[in-house]
Image (cartoon, one colour):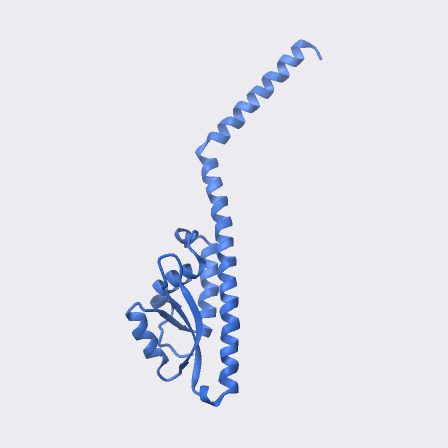
Length: 169
């Protein structure tokens, strides 16, 4: 290769490198990186929430089987309960409640911020909506929250607007 060609090629490479350096140090790249990270965190949170929902589904199905199998459980229905166990996480379970007093009991406990209760069928619908909202970026402030706590915080706080506790199943 001739020295003139080598010099021209090295100048082109230098100019391209300078252009790449400008792109790399540009704020838009930082925003792009942050966006990519948020998308990954959203998917991870939705995946973790799906695991909790699957666990609750299994518990609820066992409870529904108990309603069918044992006469002592007649007149009861499956409710999902979240307890704000600590600052970092929340506890959850599927429980049986008497259908005629469950809405009042749940409303009283919810009002005292002791727990959050919702009928199982409503929970399934709310979780589906919540996962979609997370993927849309509506809850990016909760991306680094533990999944059970995110469910409790987002559904408990938004519960009144989404579906009253004492609605019919």
